[in-house]
Image (tube, rainbow, N blue to C red; front, side):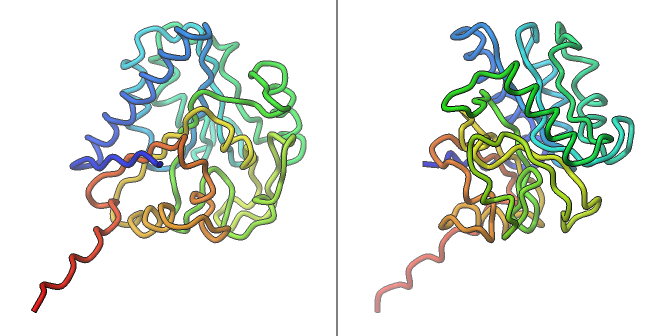
Length: 245
């Protein structure tokens, strides 16, 4: 079953997300001595990253990855890395530069994806040729996309052992991106999906319904998924039954 938590507002949702991510990283560090965390960009997770930097007191042993990236430079305003740098990287005590694995968007979709796949195979734990990350933080678009996996796209059909692929035709600008594959998202020990604002309510509702290629978020592995929303993004409760005559 998917874990769904509804919070009063966006700040409370960010607090809850930071707490859950930190707890799961601490568990991985205790059990395996290393924790693998992948971040997403977008407008929603920045505050959670600021809180997470302090929530996890010691970042030594954490390997930091990215779920996707736009094909722009690291200092570009649209860069997911830049968001992470401004909100988390400078405040995370003990996080070593060598453990921060940036998707090199400036290399373009194909070469950037090829380089990132090589890094994952070198540094991330592999099971059945798939990278198994401890936590992947995801947002959700109003169209139900996650990472850079968009509704109805052929990228949804990419199978293991592919870990990372280039995207050339994103319906959201910029069109060229790099993304982890759906099998990698599904292989994660936990995906934490954060959604706030009324504009995400329909997407969250669709994600929790039957799996569909039209809603990529619905294809995530339900038993390994935590969904954290604010009241505005919470799916509508079912209509109460009509009173009996």
